[in-house]
Image 1 (tube, rainbow, N blue to C red):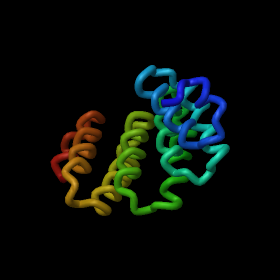
Image 2 (image 1 turned 30 degrees about the vertical axis):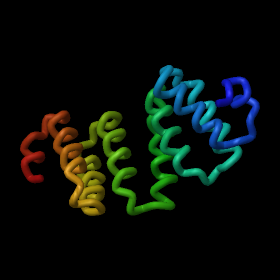
Image 3 (image 1 turned 120 degrees about the vertical axis):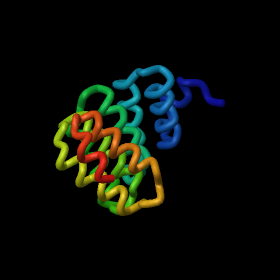
Image 4 (image 1 turned 120 degrees about the horizontal axis):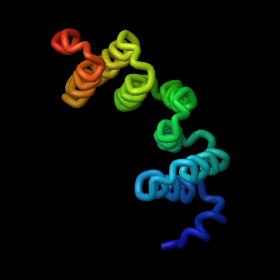
Amino acid sequence: MKDTSDMLNSDSPRSWLIMGMNLLYKSNQNHEALACFERSLDLDPENLLVYQYKASALRAIGKNSEALKCYEKILSVFPNSAEIWKEKDMHRAMWTGNVDDIKKCCKKAIHLNPDDPWMYHYLIMILNDRKTQDDAFDY
């Protein structure tokens, strides 16, 4: 396995992605992780997986509107990705608290993947967290 210094000198987008993931999830070094994801995207600007991790890093440092742009980029290519709609919902719920917007996005995710119980779980969790328990019972 390469050591960190080898990865930092690499022109491999995958190496930068892996380094960023390690920094984000193992070391909680969010700014450094973001720099790795940005380098990975410089080398491979169409890698949508990197946008997903970049959104996580941006959320962790409070750059919420930029994180939403990452989700929008992914959804522009994969508009039927229930998983990305769910992540976007969770982020929006924690950031904005706009219940109507949250419900709209969650309904979209459920429509795309109605057999996934986690979609319902997240929707109910968000609505309960936002003190709209009556709405949660509709699902």
